[in-house]
Image (cartoon, rainbow, N blue to C red; front, side, top):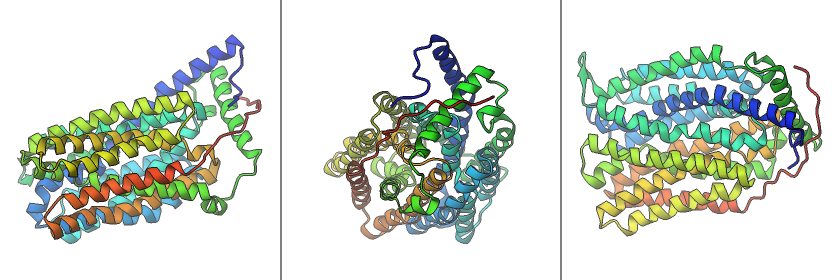
Length: 443
């Protein structure tokens, strides 16, 4: 793809290098930190469940249903929130989300019964809805297409890092009993506070657009503004669909279906993997949380390397599908080696870790199709449709566990989701066959 910055002028190249580096160093560490905190708060219920269900008298089905309540409200508010982020301010919307989810997470530490568990999960979903689309919208205002997979890789690297950090934290907090409160309660309380604090910081630290960035020189501001404006103009040279038209676009619908299948399998695993490991190994809570650092580390390496390689080659479809095929195969291997606990556990850890490499390459695909409000709404559509899987997949695992008294049906369910997603993705053709014209922007 030709870009406005692919000019042989060494001065322009030097400005481009400086601008790209400065933007990355300024924004990506904070975006990464925010998503780490978000994901720790998202998955801490899976660690809390090692103690919480016993204290509150929750069966596997009740726990799975409670996890699903999060995604009911998440789906309801995802698309409206994504549109608000694009049309109002992704910076302010991200800050609002962080503050409200932090408060709800803290309050979850004080639940006393099943009804309150369901309510806390529902409110947390409403608070967090549209966080990911808002983050994607924000990154598209700062990173051109050639850098977008790498920017998304830095964002999604937060997922395995959150597990890498969250696992030992959970292992340390769960055994405590401070002020007559059980450790799982403190897990929610202590992990909710940073989200609210970072929400306030985001209002002052994040910059809305390049034109408002005092930390860029005028030459750097002009270069990135022209780069992004050229990309928008190139897309707009082909009439961009309205929101309703985007929702009817076959490619958008297929991407939504792919992501829905992936998230259905991933959430089933995320909310049950501590329990899977404990029942497969019979190990202590400390050992389980330590083992979960392995897929987190593998996921970090896979996310960064796959996102980098996707941008370098310009190929994103196979970079998205390959991790799904590998993860699905490993979950079937768990079943094949169920008589050997060590091998089965290794396959579970590898399958959980390799999936993370899917995300950065995948999230570059929608940005090749749409721009501006239609793109933001499509991000919301893709995420909200996918979260429908979160409504029922944790419950499905709980139901299968209770019904069969075996983990095998759950592993089959997860593997099938990944293989189905990969097959659908490989049938999709997404290209960015447009050239960017030169655009003059004043900073």
